[in-house]
Length: 124
Image (tube, rainbow, N blue to C red; front, side, top):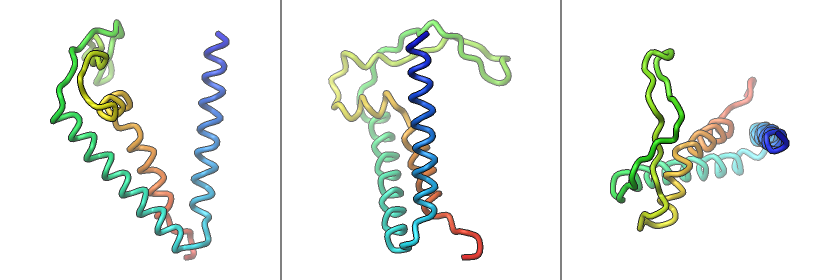
């Protein structure tokens, strides 16, 4: 119970800080710095996208194991057991394991930050 409260509090704090950072980035007055930050974020986005594709298509995969969870799609019409990839015994670089563990979630964050940096204020 206490772990759940700590986890939830930490998650809410991270979301709050992320929103504050986005607000700060949108309000940047220095257009040159804003453009440099936006270009850097989009370059990191593209590099991560390429590395994710490369890691998933050109490195060996581990065996799949059942998680015990029931995963449903299409408004609960198609349900099946959930599976995960066992990365423990793979002879692949650490960055491949990191990309496969976190998937493309960092791309979502980078995309949101990139869009926030490219946003134009009304009246500009």
